[in-house]
Image (cartoon, rainbow, N blue to C red; front, top):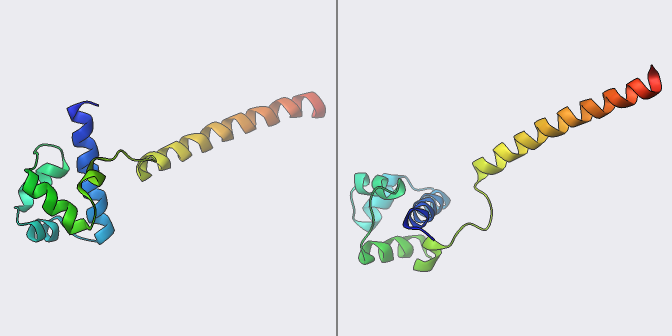
Length: 108
């Protein structure tokens, strides 16, 4: 795993757990005693955290530190949505093509 992958996983987990709690960046930053700008940089992968901030983050979410680095078991929701849209389009095109072939063979 590359550092960029680790940062991507970490930043997405911070956003994910913050969303689960329904917290804004301001609220989370206040809870763990960092600036909102620093939290935004963490969430975009521009900044890294100290071990103390890492522990504060995990504690604020009620999880173990390692959960902040565990890769997703599933695709993110936006990727799922795009995949489903693509599959629907592909299916629609294939279905229309198949119906056209059947129509030519049996109805013409």
